[in-house]
Length: 115
Image (cartoon, rainbow, N blue to C red; front, side, top):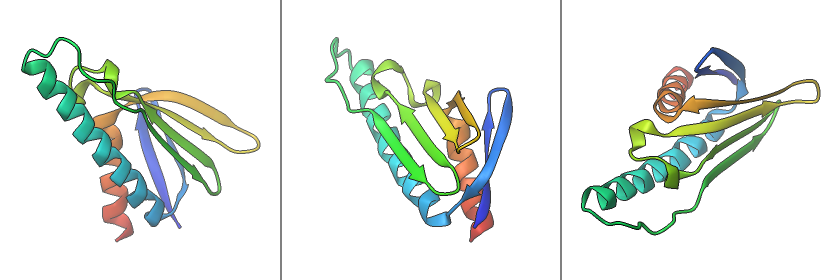
């Protein structure tokens, strides 16, 4: 199992992460990006009240527990979006915010190295 490094606003966190799980997270992020783009397009078209979209919640339980959460309804564009990341095990719990675009880069980089 390879190491995934998530670059955070201030620092980084590295942990063991399965490539299949990274692919599942990437698929969830792709759905989130489509949702964010749809919301941005509705706003650009002048729609005053967009229909609420479901939150993205991804959970992984392996050597550590990873949770990635995003509410797409509060961001004007996909590039402004942030995700809440929680990484924990029996001794440590880290909860922080990261930029969605950075998370995408980190996952893509991980998958390239794991291939």
